[in-house]
Length: 290
Picture 1 (cartoon, one colour):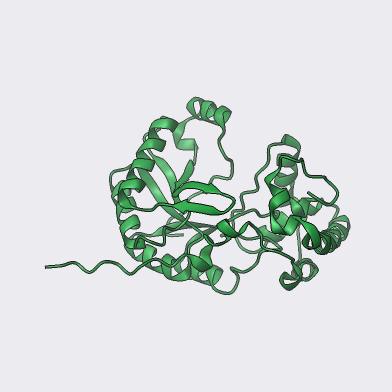
Picture 2 (picture 1 turned 45 degrees about the vertical axis):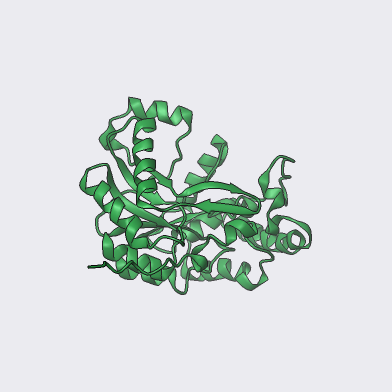
């Protein structure tokens, strides 16, 4: 990253917003994002026009009741708008003091480079976990070249690597039941992956979720995973992952236990899958006319 900045790892709900008002603002690193207008099981609408970027930012400032946002992410890339236009407006918001740092989410290598040329990108939020490792060949080296921090989301595989749908049943209302990796023959195949991870976790005297997070944390100091949870117990378990120490041999054993080519099914539904980094190139910048 161009400047050292602690990336926040806690999502704010209504209670969090109340807590925000009670704490010294300078002690808080606040992140939020914009870009997804609407979504359903078969479509995702993304908007990245300069006007929309500004209106979302100013709306967030008002709702959060703060003067600035520390880290403002483009949640998904609008492939109909040149990234230079979106970044240009975010650069103006930085200059106005409304945001401090700019982040991208699920951006392609070309989009990352072009965005970074307009204004330094501080962080890239992107899916990365033991069973989703497609960013290792291109994205991670590029981020390290440009000194961009990496914020892996779904670092426990949407709970699967903690045992969801294997040793812990899914509530009928859970959206996970509709995801390809959690259903039918895919689920049967993927259960073998969980049991291998569980065996290694027992060896390291930790939970499978802690082992999955520890593996990720050992990938580099530029990795700041954001596991989501609604349970205090799981929050404490996640924090405990920093105490799990792994050698190079351990890391190889863990990675070998979850071969990417054995993972069955897409990590998310088709609509969201097509908003991921492989599909996130934008049109070239418009050439100014005389």
